[in-house]
Length: 174
Image (cartoon, rainbow, N blue to C red; front, side):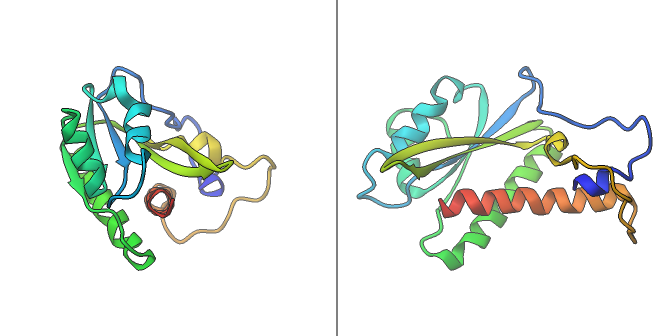
C-alpha cells in the first residue's frame, strides 16, 4: 500500500483516523459458546461508555446473549467461526456489513475490538479499520516507484480492502 501511494499525484490528501464526532461502528468479537469465562464481558467493558454512541456489529452468539442481558443494543450480530476453515466466511460477512454501512452513510469510521491471549491472561485489542490510516504504510526509504497496470487509486483501494479483510480474519482467529 505504501509503495502504491508513492504514485499518488502531488496534493493528494492522505486519510487518517476519523474525527471523534463522526458516527462510528464498533466490531466486537466475543464468545460463540459457553465455558469462556468473562471473555465477552472483557470486550464489552473495554468499550462500555461508547456502546450507545456507535453502531455495534457483534460477533459471537454467546457474546450477543451476554450483551442483551446487559441491555446493550446490537445493530447486527453473526455467529463466530467454530473452526479455522470458517474464519474467511465470518470475515466476509463482517466486511459486507462494514462496507454496506459506510455506503449507506450509517457510519464513517470503524474499529475492531477483540480478545487475545497475553501473559497467561486475556488482553483486549482495539484497532482502527476505517478510514484506513495510510500513514502506517508509507515506506521509510525512497526507492523507484513500482510499475503497475492499474490506476494507482484502484490499486490502493483493492489492497486496502484486502488489508481490512486480513485484519478481520486475524481478529476472528484470536
